[in-house]
Image: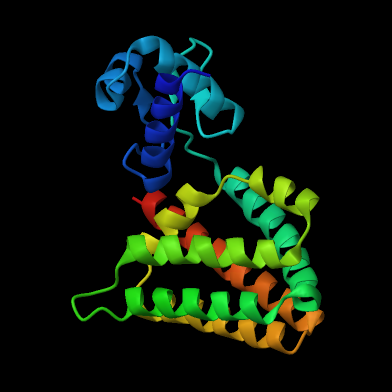
Length: 218
């Protein structure tokens, strides 16, 4: 891949995941080329890569769109994520090191600071810290196979959209669930860690479903 293609790929991917390119919106090569500062050929290559990652959908007429997943597809994403991350939590409880525990605590402190800002929660900061926290759990699970399987599940847009609808109480509950996970890891209790992670993700699934239902209600 060319350097220009890599540039376009990174820029488009970040904008899709952040929600700047909204679900359902058409991705026009000329506009993307201008946005990324490259020609249309690198954009075309980048879109093919993103399509392979399920971050772009191509219509029957070969037009590219940001996916707007159906409720059934979203439920499947959350179900698969719950299965994989609960297994990761169980493994992490057995294998986690003191340094990794410290890293999780530090990450959750950053997340708490994003929630407790006097001027209101920093949702972008919350989402980034949340992503880092779950990445650290996966790292502590020490399974290359599990990491690859988890990497195939695309849910960052869903996480970001859900978090934007959270009030401070919702965000604080997420922080508290992370804190409970850390305690389970510190006790090396795999069953406890797995149960907390499952509940954590299922709560997010129901929150997202409520958001979609509200959006579709006339």
